[in-house]
Amino acid sequence: MGLDLERQKRAPIYAALERFRRQRVVPFDVPGHKRGRGNPELVELLGEKCVGIDVNSMKPLDNLCHPVSVIKEAEELAADAFGAAHAFLMVGGTTSSVQGMVLSACKPGDKIILPRNVHKSAINALVLCGAVPVYIDPKVDAELGIPLGMEVADVRAAIEANPDAKAVFINNPTYYGICSDLRSLVSLAHEHGMLALVDEAHGTHLYFGPSLPLSGMAAGADMAAVSMHKSGGSLTQSSLLLCGPNVNAGYVGNIINLTQTTSGSYLLMASLDISRRNLAMRGAQSFSKVVDMAEYARREINAVGGYYAFGSELINGGSIFDFDVTKLAVNTRGIGLTGIEVYDLLRDEYDIQIEFGDLSNMLAYISIGDRIQDIERLVGALADIRRLYAKPKSALFTAEYITPNVAATPQQAFYSEKESLPLRQTAGRICSEFVMCYPPGIPILAPGEVITPEIIDYIEFAKAKGCSMQGPQSEDISELCVLKEG
Picture: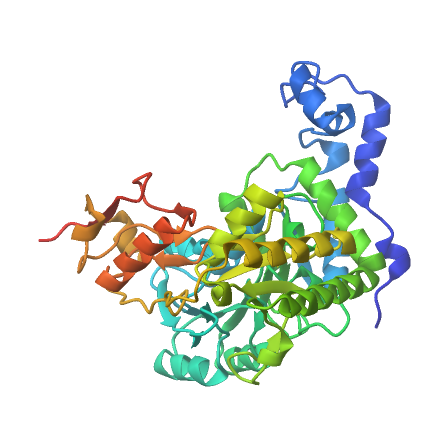
């Protein structure tokens, strides 16, 4: 049965806010700026219309914590548009969606199978709930310097070794566009009585784009975290948590309310409502253009020489089961520069802001808001950088991922007695905090992992090359917190 496009034309939260705005209600509630009158500089920045609908929950506008009217309808429309049994509007980013999945699936001491190259939000969830991670080390493309997808054989081995695990957590697609065999992984989890949870932070478009890789709900996943604000066009920090038919949505709602704000932003919720309508009505057409632009950019960048904008030619049926061609990831090793160095040059010298650069690659995020002239400008700048700044190809780190030695659960390590030591003196000790380059936000170290000389070298190299390092209490990453010995 196809999507009811006539119903999808509705945007109930947006409509309710418009009705409310026309009523000119006198506010004796929060927020205290009172439609902007108490903060004229905020009005100047955002505009009267924007601050005028920055309102609190009230009967005509429903309540995100327990929706019964317009928010409930908006969630039903989102579920229909994404092929889910239930959808939750999330205003804490996809971090909240990921944590909602993990906290719904796992209680203290429960095992969860997941790739180690997960976003920090998933490991943060383990810190919160006390679940025990069973990590699968991803295969790595040493030439490109990227972790790959989850192989079915590796997941099967982890399941057979841990038949009491409650869930399998799957990244799909990765930041770099790598997709796993999602249908097989979901089926494998279900065959063993485990939930299949999919982090689709970078996969909103998979639900609407023609000829794109399989989406989580289409693959039969139990839950999927979808970053509407990335490729879906909604405001930053707005997200969706999708549930399949076998998930108790009432319980998931209770879990979400443990951590999500009780003051849900109507700006964020309205943006989700409008963006869902836009995708339902025009998503296929829009993402067809995105695919064309990304493929054009790939061809043009590869014609420059020195760079490698990789794509669907990488597909091997296993660790790269499919490829999301909207992701414009470019390997920069051929011009002797790290991705972060190219990132800095594009921003500082050419006024071009890309998504991120790492030690081997840069990523330009192509979306429904891009234009072909912007692509041309990016290609021209990359050609210029090659001509002006290229160096002899040097031996850089061979991967963006280092296999961890897990000595304690994230929760145990995070809450244990700890001490702070200079970075070089931490080798052999157990880390009690996170260290990561952000973006992409995949931890180099997570709580409970043994710090090795190789990891220290990697951290120092990433710092020297200008990666934005986050996680430790130490602001300049000169020290790390480790578990006290004895």
